[in-house]
Image (tube, rainbow over all chains, first blue to last red):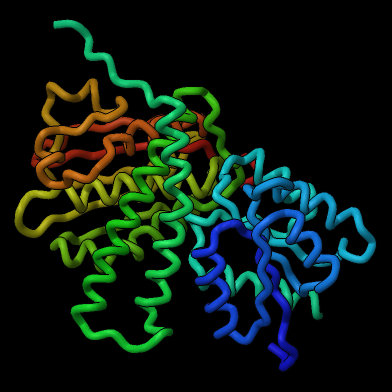
Length: 129
Length: 237
């Protein structure tokens, strides 16, 4: 990867999950931003313009689906890639997430931390080509 | 004797199982970082203990998944994401993943695959779960001493036939009708692995049935059992 520090935003209510991701992504050379609610997440998407968003679906207030819809509706944020990382594993949720514009849908219990980092790196590389 | 009524998995149980998934993912992530020694070297005993915790967390995860799957099957809401794929590739991957465990358990796995087998249609993720369950049962429920596990794949008309033959403890004839029922566990199986959920074969049957295939078993002439399942061949190869 090039030298520029890529900015990742994780929107997830769980502080323990954010912590392990924060530490891992920092070790991997990323700038790591966090949000705990959908509203906070949308504000950070809009003002911080991260290179990629990791989004949970079950959030207090606005759900992850709401965040996805709103981010994709705005001209300034519609091209920011969003990866869903959720415990919802129903086919209907996966389908909905991808149809709404997420570039990937990962299920928390099925994917390792290193795998998420790998997918994020691959997505950023692909977008920078 | 009256028919034994098997308990229904209530919505409450499914909600609890779902809520367990978040802390389980967190345990797994933290353990992954520690075991990888990204945060600093571990001594042999620390590594061993952390790996033991990880193994138990994975078992807990499997139980939670089994409860959720069984609940959805009961509610007729269980769905497969069908696509065409190579069953042989999945079987090879599972054997590779289980190779260290099989070796430690004194099991030798043999795999025979008919040449040029066509792709099958089902949900590759769920079918991997079926293959893992059947092979892991053969490793877990073995007799003392070395054991052979023979896995084969061949074409059978419009289907691909999977078989897994072992030399293990087997299933008593009196239990044959219960094997694919919810929460079935033979007495010997409970002795060898007290942590099993008794839902694996019940879920396997639902997955294979939803794939329009068939799953069954036979008692071997010698010790052990052979489990079979079929999956339809993809029209587009």
